[in-house]
Length: 200
Ligand code: IMP
Image (cartoon, rainbow, N blue to C red; front, side, top):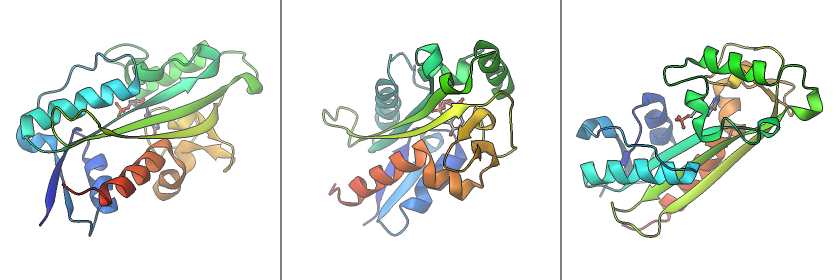
């Protein structure tokens, strides 16, 4: 029997990525748009709180188990900012370009060794709305903030995120290379492993 799980995201790329990784596992990923789930209020102070809020909201509306993720960029010289505010760093309506411009401005004149940063991804699985023991997986990707954007792939802060092991920005990596290294890829593989041994 196929077990359906709702994905608390309106991003079709995420739904496809999960679907591919769970192929043949007996688990079917259903985007939350199928259940007209309204946006959850992300009022948490941590990635994991926000991921739980999103998963709980999707589970409540769909009456299915739910997966949610929350991710962002931590910059050491900014005390971990933009962190959970990564999508809205330059304001509520900010574009990726606005956020990147503000980040460069904040780090202006800072030398290479002080530009350390990492992406964080928290993934949460709730068996039901009131599940007291969620499955939680975290993935981290270490890098440095560049002085200028480089590359056209990816999204968000990718053009400014230097990947030391590849000697280029995240936006210069093909998608499959980014997935193999990234915070999201790591968290996703951890969750898939734990889900495939999960018995509903
Ligand atoms: P969300 O978890 O999809 O809401 O992402 C939060 C924000 O963090 C995004 O809007 C991006 O600004 C940033 N972010 C998260 N993951 C990545 C990534 O893989 N590359 C670049 N930016 C990212």
